Length: 421
Image 1 (cartoon, one colour):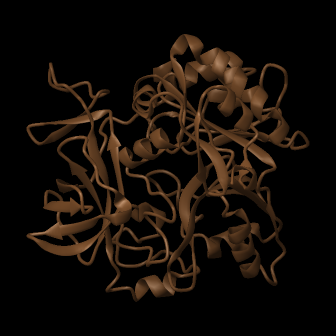
Image 2 (cartoon, helix red, strand yellow):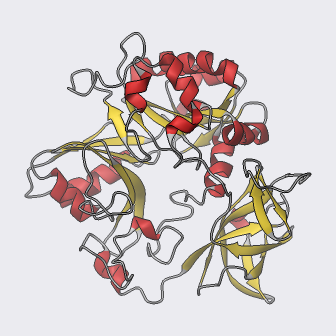
C-alpha cells in the first residue's frame, strides 16, 4: 500500500528521523515524531516545523484573472483586507472558499495577489486538479490561464513565537523581509525568473515566497520553494532552530493546533453542505449589517435561499478526554440534535472558574495546572447560544462540553513581528 501513496520531497527525512507515517490526502505524512503533545506545546511556546508539501498550489494569471477569482471565490477581493475592508493588493492574501452551484464547499483556500494579473491559490491535499478544473470551467470566454502546480513545489510551515528568530538566521536581509510584513501578507517568489524572486532568499540565494500566515493560530510563516530546494531549506531551518527549541511536527499537532485556533479542516468541518451558519463568517462577503452579500459569486444564490441550512458550532470540554468524531453524536437534554465534525485536544489550555486560559496567557492564575481541553466543531439543526451545555457521545464515551465562540486565548498570529525579535 505504501508504494501506491505519494511522497513529499521530505519523505526520506521524516523516515530517517523516526516519524510515524500515515496516509493522508493521497500522501504518506508524519503524524508525529516522538510526542504529539510536546509538538503542540512547542508551537505555542517556542516553534514547530511542518512539512505541508502535500498542499496544492494553482497559478491563475491573465488579463481576466481578477474577474475570474472575484466570481469563483467567496471573498470580495475589492473589499477584504483589514478592518477597513481595503482591496486585495500586491503581496496580500485572503481566506475564503470555492463553492458549487448549490452553495456547498468544494474546498477552502488562500488566494494571493502576486501582481496585477497574477494570483496564487493554495488549496488542500489532492484538491489541486479538482479546484483547477472548477475554476477553468468558470473561465470560459475569459482571457485567463489556470495552472495546477501540484507536486511541483515544496511547502514548509514554521510556526510559533521563536519562528521569527529562526528565520532571521537563514534569510538574506531579514530586516528588509520582515519590514512591513503584516498578518496575511507575503513577499518574494519561488520562481527564479520572477522579478520578485530577489525579495526573499536564503543566504545562498535560493528564492522563496514567504507568507506570514499559517494553520495554528500562532505567529509564523508558510514557505513556498521549488521542489528541488525543499530538503535544503528544511534542513537549514532545523539547524538554525536548534538553539531556539524548534521541533519538527506532524499532522496530529497540526490538527489539535488548528482546532484550538478555531480553523476548519476541509472535507471534515466544511464540505458537501451549505457553506453558511458557521464560525467563519469572514469567509463570506457579508454586508456590514449582515443582511446580504456585497457581491454575487458562484453559489451565492443558493446561500441566500438557505434558511434551513445546518449550523456548525464550536465547543470546548472540561478536560482532555475526547470522542471519536467519526462516530459521535450530539445530545441536548437527552435528545440527539446533530453530529460531531472534529474533536481534538488542545494541550495548551485549561479552565479555571469557567474561563479558558492558555499557557501563553499573561493573566493565568498562579498555580493553574494546564493539562489540555477537548475542543472541536459540531453540526446541528439550529443555533445554540454560547454557554449552552451539550453532550457528545461516540458509543464508548460521553463527554459534557460547552458551546463557545473561541478556544485557545492569547494566540500570537496577529502580533507585530518586532515583538518577537
